[in-house]
Image (tube, rainbow, N blue to C red; front, side, top):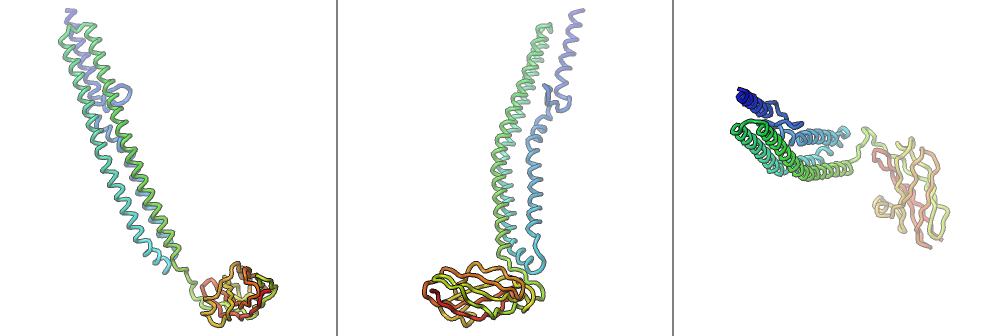
Length: 322
């Protein structure tokens, strides 16, 4: 009677211990079993980073496209939009290609991970079944019970070792794929930003509405302070609109031939270091260096306003270097 009671108690313990890990949730932490849902849980952990990366990519693409369209109103905005269209298409194609390559490269890693999890689960269940069969065929005494517990613990430990190995293998493969995908994404972004900057640089400067009045011409350009290689220029600042306001810039040119027409001015040498225009009526000056000794030079100046209106040609004085 006592032996029969021991057998029944041992059998109850056996079935209870075998049922708990198989049906108690996912149970993948602290030595508990995974059950048949372990494969799905492992895969969900494996692709969690991928989902976050895809979400970040969508936000980045949205922000980049939003920045690309932050331009001024009018013709300039239309010109930039037309310039950016090919760059946007190239960027979208590059991101799509990178995503496709990433998914293609991850597919074998996912398959290997699932196969490893399935094999580990099969091995665990097989070991537990073998331990159960051995126990039921024994005298179910203390030694048999201890042997069953040892077999159960080993099967569970082997499962967790195999699970960790599969996770590490998948993480390593994914890291390599993610690095390639990130590099492609960064290159596409850098290329798009470069195209955007190029479009901004080549876009025509906006013309203030209604400003068609050019600065007045300089009529009192004088030469002085001559040396063997330099001549100083003095003049009165013109206005922005005729003789009022402040012009935007000067264009000073010189030549050893007379400067009579606009064509002569265009082919003349352009001076460097022109001062910023001052308010109309102010005295301004500059020195042109690097001239040839004993040569006669003709000088002329034009003023330009912010709208791109250019003044008429100034008077054209001449002087010879020492």
